[in-house]
Image (cartoon, rainbow, N blue to C red; front, side, top):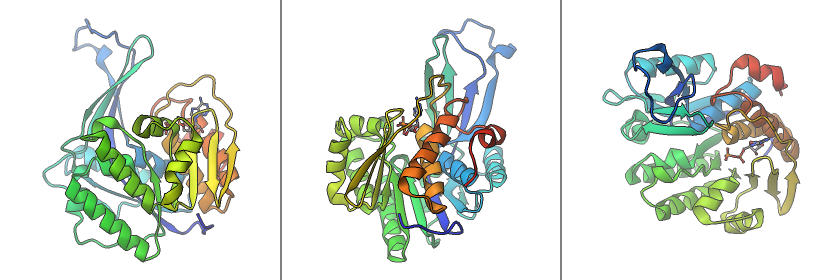
Length: 323
Ligand code: ADP
């Protein structure tokens, strides 16, 4: 990643969903009256690439972040658009579908502290983004996407996405990619491997996660991940591995950046997304990779000590020094 000034434009592509979270622990079989207050849910908006956009912007307010997605014409879509405005994320690449709504997921916390997720996203507007935006051209310095951004598209749109990436690269854009493997979004593991490999091959900056690579490729350590990525010509590889540390491979040099372990983890949702946002913000602000990894780790460590994907602005600024 070449050092760039903070006015550079980043376009982040993906899906933001409605998140409904139960506000109290539930037994696995609810015996309560469903009309009582016990069934209260908290509503918010989240999605891997959206989380990254929010945290990147919070870390580096002078950056220009556009979120590329499609939303519906429903009131929840309007609320999301308003929320993006609050986060100062540009909505010039948010497209509207007249026939589809936002995707939604629900999290249930049971008495043992385990979380269960249910999703309603197959028909979401974001799964049609490339179809809806057809003919729209834009330019950016960085284009960021994840494996989830690819997984929710059909094959035809995936091909269109890679044409878009080629044309952006031809105009000088750099590509950042996080594989974020979610098995349930892919029709087969082979499919996931194919498209993930294709995205890595376009990337200038990559964020492989140890868990993702174990599940998708069976890689059990950093060396296996780096040797898989060796022929992909990626300028900067930043491998996340929870509290174990961050491995960076850049210009043939490898280093490990230690991570201070959080003992009282409240909710690991969005840890990797927050890390990526913090890392890229620090790099855009001119910090070196090692310092950027420490900064990203600090952002992630803060996020996992609060519930939900997007923590409050106050909680964030209390812990994270701006760049
Ligand atoms: P993902 O969420 O993508 O699976 P990880 O689990 O590796 O990725 O977490 C992403 C980042 O979050 C890590 O690089 C680390 O900085 C931070 N992190 C995760 N778990 C912990 C923990 N227990 N203590 C401190 N930091 C953590």
